[in-house]
Length: 92
Image (cartoon, rainbow, N blue to C red; front, side, top):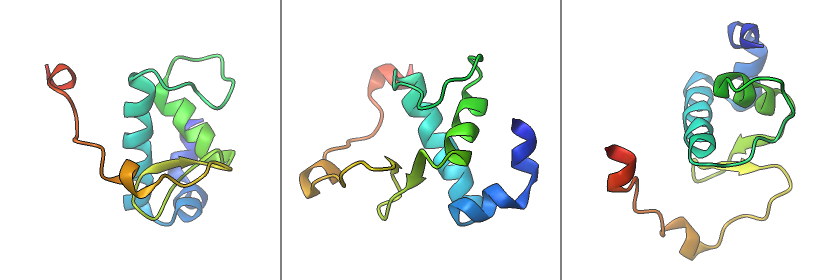
């Protein structure tokens, strides 16, 4: 699974190495916070789950740089400005 990260195909799929790094980091945070995996893998390795989600076109970076799910309606303007960042519980 992680062998896919060595291939240029996954980099091209998301639009570059920076975007790949961004989508992996943001999705792993979401999974750590309790988001449901979008693929069925017999592993708890979040990196493997995220890579498979990318390979199966389940997630992508939207125009605002946030992770979006394929087929999901774009967030409202209010939702875009509602995120105040990590809470103190996340930092400690």
